[in-house]
Length: 182
Ligand code: 5GP
Image 1 (spheres, protein in one colour):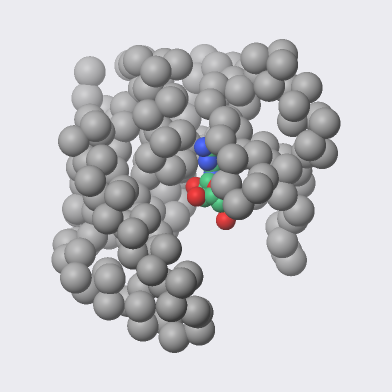
Image 2: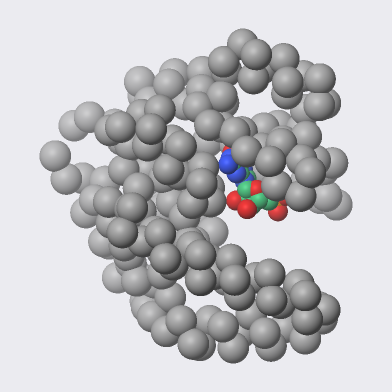
């Protein structure tokens, strides 16, 4: 079977990280790409694990060398998917990219065979309540998250598959079926 490039997106709080981790634990023929970023590592993050942390000049140099499948700027920092890593790994395994909607659509442009999966919550209202209910942020931060959620969900029809994360095991099985389809 041909290895696949699976691009997984979904709103914050929908549980995509848990799904991706469970998929990697279960499937030795699947691995996750590590993105490059110019943001500083957070407490506990390691170079080469969560991200490859690059200096801005290094990142710009790699853009010039066309070494990103896609890249974008978030909160003043660059983030990008390393093309050489993804293409080399695809020779051996399927590769997962966990990126946002813009990154996913740009990946599809660069590699039309990539498979775009959006993870959605069983109840949007319930997710909204949870995003509001964390209680630690300003109204502006909450507003930002909610409008981002609405934007992401509005892009569902650009995706090849929409998977409802109502039950971890069921959603995982659905993703595995996509992975194993010819
Ligand atoms: P954080 O700094 O919190 O780890 O990530 C900030 C944002 O960058 C998130 O929305 C995340 O999805 C996005 N991001 C992480 N890696 C990539 C990437 O390789 N490409 C793009 N386009 N976005 C990314």
